Length: 208
Image 1 (cartoon, helix red, strand yellow):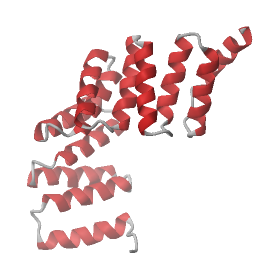
Image 2 (image 1 turned 60 degrees about the vertical axis):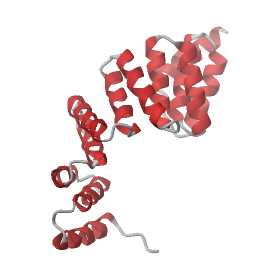
Image 3 (image 1 turned 90 degrees about the vertical axis):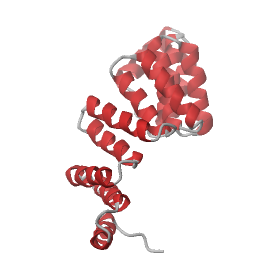
Image 4 (image 1 turned 90 degrees about the horizontal axis):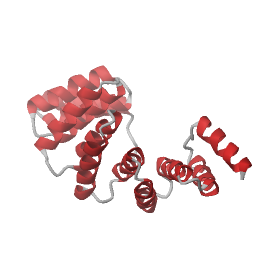
């Protein structure tokens, strides 16, 4: 089967819209293809139209939240994901995204609540597990961060941010050789560990 480009898919979907202009799913799929092209203005237009045609498309709210996040609009991101969670309460992704926004705002307790909810709805939601590890680290629960990062790596062994979180946690525990192992593993996945963290680690390793 030949894979179509986003432009080809958009053309085909727009043709389909001519026959069924009220179809929310078709509008949604056009919006997603515009997102792949990083044409966010057209993506927003079609995703919003999808919601107007079919207010129950929870994924459309999530995608709009993703665009808002990309634009640096945390309030917009939170608001769209909250709408998605109301449309489909047990949909894990919006709860995970709301947890991420809480964390960006420094509201760690609310972040942990939302992320645990996301994981309860989807125990294999890797990003939520990793973000929960970050939340524990921010809260000062170092062992919680390590345990949570371990769970993330069990689910996805090449998930760089989890190794990074674990490395930061071992730095806090002054276990610098373990931290180095974690940062090396993070780098192997293509994740870029902050240079100032690596400098601090090297200094501590020299001190022995």
